[in-house]
Length: 302
Image 1: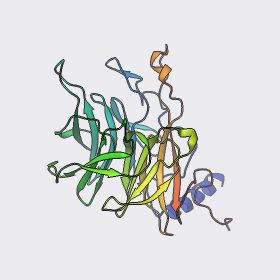
Image 2: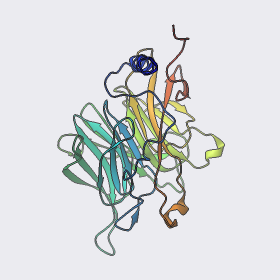
Image 3: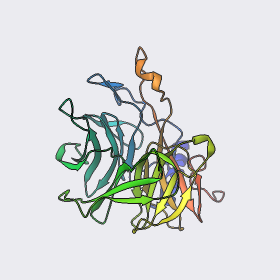
């Protein structure tokens, strides 16, 4: 009887999200905690914290410094692949997983280069790569209407931390669409857009603020013309994606933090494995709030 009740409640929660299948109710349990899900070091390179995440109806994807991990919604490892650092954000579109990758130079005096890597979202097999000709960093990536939008770091960040470069690329061919362009969102940040997602109408860009304790806006909402239409204080996330279910006018997010991350962990012996905590938030009526604890319940169940 107890198991039937739990199943019924879970089904109700999933229905509230407007999805069916493998989606699970919000949880406080770390997702990336299963043995073998994360290697703290790959090829002598420390994996660092979660760089980005994205979600589909039956899988969660996590990008770290030197690997991509796929799990189900219960955190069970499906596939893990290694790749050269530094991997940034990721997104899924039409069965493909796109990753922003910043590669070290092969030559001693060379410069770092930004690449787009494309994987089969089911198997995580590499399909194609593209050097986009950018010599700075690249992190945030999202796809809207067949166009990839990428964050190309900041322009003259030491004197103007709120000016960010963006680029557009055809999601099929990876060919550039126009030249990189500057967006000034008016908030000082470090490292540019870390996580980038969209709901088909608006873009949601997550930044690291220069002073987390100051509680300055770190989630910026842009329209299609990259005009700022909203700013929100939402902590320092290391993964962000829109999930379906906003039938009541809300936009809902899955977001991720690396709960046991510390720079000192790279020197730990034995190594400390990465644990990622996936939670949920809701943006409605101009306000954003964490909904992980109470799921979607607005009224007592009958």
